[in-house]
Image (cartoon, rainbow, N blue to C red; front, side, top):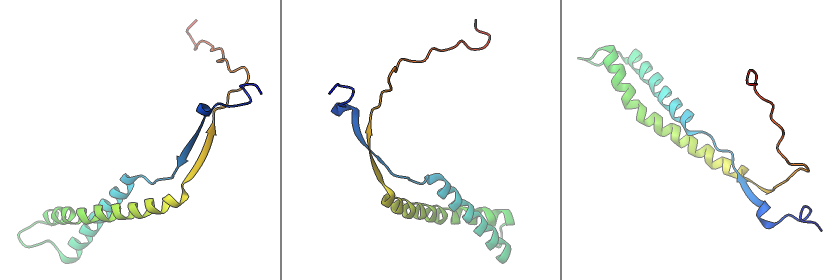
Length: 112
């Protein structure tokens, strides 16, 4: 057998692929849920005494943001944990086509 038909061990390798969700959309959604919750609470109960509506809204947004971030992170962890079940392992082998010389490049427009 020729060396082209018999691949050497360095041309083969295993690759593990696991789909993982991005963390940032979950955290951003958690903060947005906190802002909406703060707006609803301020509109339903009214602003606190000695504070304006904007001040009450800002305080509650900060107070609700941490639980919102935590909720987004926990949901991301659960989805990431479930994605581990869809992990796939592939055996890759380097493939060289016959005549694997690089193609001749044509000059770009205007550069003659």
